[in-house]
Amino acid sequence: MSKHTFQTEVSQLLHLIIHSLYSHKEIFLRELISNSSDALDKLKHLTLTNDKYKSLDFDPKINLEFSDGDNPTLTISDTGIGMDKNDLVDNLGTIARSGTKNFLSQLSGDQKKDSNLIGQFGVGFYSCFMIADKVEVISLKAGSKQAYKWISDGKSGYELEKVDKKSVGTEITIYLNEEGKEYSNRWQIDQIVKKYSDHIAFPINLTFDDIEYDDEGKEKSKTPKTEQINKATAFWKRSKSDLKESDYNEFYKSISNDMSDPFDWIHSNAEGILEYTTLFFIPKTAPFDLYRADYKPGVKLFVNRVFITDDEKELLPTWLRFVRGIIDSSDLPLNVSREILQQNRILSKIKSNSVKKIVEKIKSIASNNEKYEEFYKQYGRMIKEGVYQDYENKEELLELLRFKSTKEEGSVSFQDYVDRMKTEQKSIYFLVGENETALRQSPLLEMYNKKDIEVLLMDDEIDEVIMPVVTKYKDFEIKAVNRSSAADELKSDDDKNSEKEIKPLIKKIKTALGDRVKDVKVSNRLSDSPSCLVADENDPTAQMQEIMKAMGQGAMQEVKPILEINPNHKIVSKLLSMRKSKAFDDITFLLYEQALIQEGVKLENPAEFVRRLNEVLTKSL
Ligand code: ADP
Image (tube, rainbow, N blue to C red; front, top):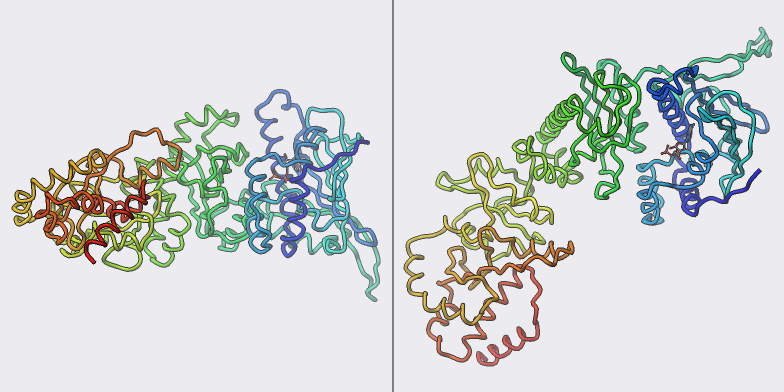
């Protein structure tokens, strides 16, 4: 016998599970059955694809047995792939996935929140310690000769020893504690299995004592009996008309580890040239690892109900990585490698059809504003990623975007915008920035507001990245109002005149500012402010440059903005007449610096700015 201690993270996880999942303790059975089912899937796959295992007598089963009385136990055994010594050490003594480790370190200690999160990423095997004093795992791996026993009280570590076991598979015996006593009961087990594991594709048998009573109600005879207690048909292959909402909810929970009901689902069956079934779920809250590079994909691939993989990120495009579910195809070979999967034409067809179905679903959700708002809060960013990545569906995804607007509270779609724009308007205008309040007060909007032209406001960081690829909606060009050309439509004849007049002034401002700006121009877009900064047609904007800097892409050549001045503003008219004055440079710089501040850019030399400001103030007092 050898003694081992748990990896620190395991102890942490155990502690957490026991304390935060207490009110859901019955899920331990779902977790263990699901592990058994995975183990059966793996062995089934081997016997079908690997010559070494073809002769193996595969009789897939999950058996449940219990004993009540003073020392109650519950035993779950399966004829799955089993674990050898290394597997036991690696799987039941450490936490391998780095995502899970990171996740653990982020937990807050807020039990309610933690229990939701912990449910999301899967508690697995360790959940049985909620109801156990001690757990024994005896396992023989397919292909090995020696079986091992793993024993632990779920506190600091475990023991391992060699044992005899003839048949391949795993047997887990739980020594039930006070909290777990109730699970040494036929009806209790039956009910939990029906609730969580009815769809498991293998038979789950329960052994119990069949008791006969005599006329006086006394026990007459007791015979052990075994009964299959689940339906054992692949859930997704069942007819839609047989399935109720609650069935979908339970199935979703069993494949996702999420404890809440799904937000929505899409179940479809394709027949004809390609035969496949898909069942996709949209979780109510976005999975916790959505923005991690090592996120766990949520879709499992089956071939004719045989499990193939749950670790393939290419089954759906990355922007749909929040979707959970199943793809089951009849037309793929069983022994598909990852490389084959990624190039497989059947799979890519299934993939593109699946995306279409999901997009359709999202569109139908979008027809209900309230429901869509809930969806968008969780997955709006994913739609934006889709606009950026998914060329095939871009047009449809554009319809699904929502923005803030200068015209209306709440969210607005491109279609809403187009529906109410004036006939002479040729483009759709938008402004991206850090926060809504600053955006609403931006000088760049002055003329648009005055002329009653709606501008979409975007305050999500990702907008700055995706909007450059969104150049058109239907026949309308989409223009950032902080681009030099966006104000062309605002031009009027008066403006042209003033431009002529003001030429020498512009030249002088340009000289004063030197290479701080790319150019100085007369603005059509300003009404109340004296100046603003815009980006040249194809240059990244100031905010974009800030994002690039934050992402460590500092090496990018710095791009200078264009300074626009308002020819009708008092300060500018005054400047015209004081071109020779000493204060000219100070005022010019102040015009430039105030525009920077309004863009949300940090001044490089605030002290100089303050000096200039005070100089001008002193003079005016
Ligand atoms: P998860 O199932 O999320 O990977 P678990 O803690 O439930 O996490 O299980 C860890 C690993 O232990 C599984 O991935 C599997 O490799 C192994 N395992 C658990 N139960 C069994 C079993 N009944 N048969 C074979 N392997 C198992």
